[in-house]
Amino acid sequence: MSTLTVWKFDTADGAENALEKLKGLTKQELIQVLDAAVVTWPTGRKKPKTYQAVSTVGVGALGGAFWGMLFGLIFLVPLFGMIVGATAGALSGKFTDYGIDDDFIKELRDKVTEGTSALFLLTGQVTVDKVSAAFSDSEKGELIQSNLSTEQEAKLREDFGAEI
Image 1 (cartoon, rainbow, N blue to C red):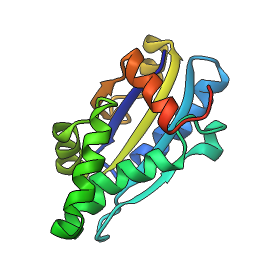
Image 2: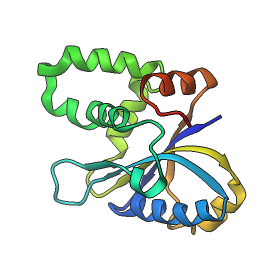
Image 3: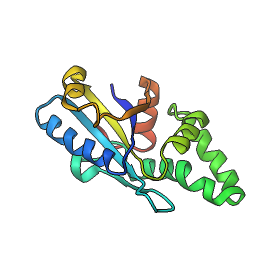
């Protein structure tokens, strides 16, 4: 079973720093990172930079199509407004199948703003207390979302993923 979590950081480089620390914890077998994606939004930029962190954690479990569609829905659709309204509605409906609903998307839009960052993680086995202890209070992000039922995980893998 996997867990999809989203962590928001109060700095533009917080998510990348957390991912670096998780790589070390992965080597210690304290956490199994199946896939990850990062959103960074430096101060002064009109939009965030997003990327799938496949090269740092191995073969991507969900693939670039999933992350690209999700980030497009969260960060780009508001910029285009009515032009892509119908497409956004269809995408939004599709993501509901995975437990990613309109409230989740709105919360991310509201929280991941200029000067912040977010780390999207798909994890397997985690030794929660040891992973948590590895991060100082100033390094810990705010947990925005944690969800993935067995059915949603299977649907994600079927639609976007590689076999894990």
